[in-house]
Length: 330
Ligand code: CUA
Image (cartoon, rainbow, N blue to C red; front, side, top):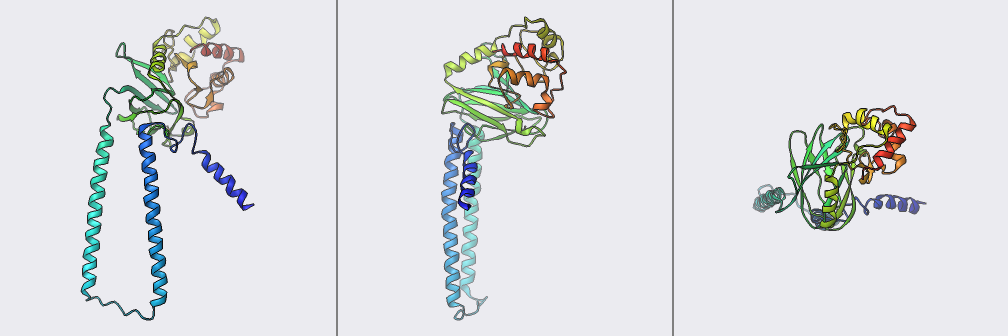
């Protein structure tokens, strides 16, 4: 019985150690460094722990045997002064080494080493991510949301900001986490070393839907990445369907969302120009399927209570028309 409970606990605890969001399966240079440091700390800390426990056990054992024979400590004993000086000296030397090491490590982290890094801006919003890529052709910015594409083996330098409260940007498999603070820009370098899909998650409590503030990360070859970015730079086709056109271009959608190539030019919510090219809806909350899209546009508050997207009051037929159009935005 007890063994079964332990096995289930171990399964639950270890389930987090693999997959798309694990610090124990690094897929980036930065995460690999942290992973190495983690095991070094476990080894050194574990060794020190065993050493201290052995010392404690030994002194307890000795004290019990010698209790009767030990003379009282004489405070005028010169050996006490000498050992006090020795220990104080060791503490000062230890602290100096640690402070110097920490200073040098911080400087190295702050510098980064990216030369021709890809430039990306990510802004945290309650509860989604605005993502902008520097356009290599025009020098302008190409906007998307809730999904990050990174070229394999190349460093991407991400400028992190926030539009409302403090969020924290974290892709556990690829790099350390870094806070996104309103009014300032923090820089983080990401150098992925393994292709595939990964998951990022907001790592600072930022309100009711903090847990539903995630994003998908795709690491792909430079050629695949260039193709993807070229598609993202293109405008979309306006809705051909009259119902979808009325709701999206003249209705409430256009107040918050932008779809380049159409009359929808809102800036408050995520850019939807290539919405259906993404893997999930509402910052990792729902999968990208027709049913999920329709459910989301009709009842956003049901899927993500408290989201800034208000109830839309669409009829099922209108919801269907909008979902069908959104699905074409690849
Ligand atoms: Cu944003 Cu937690």
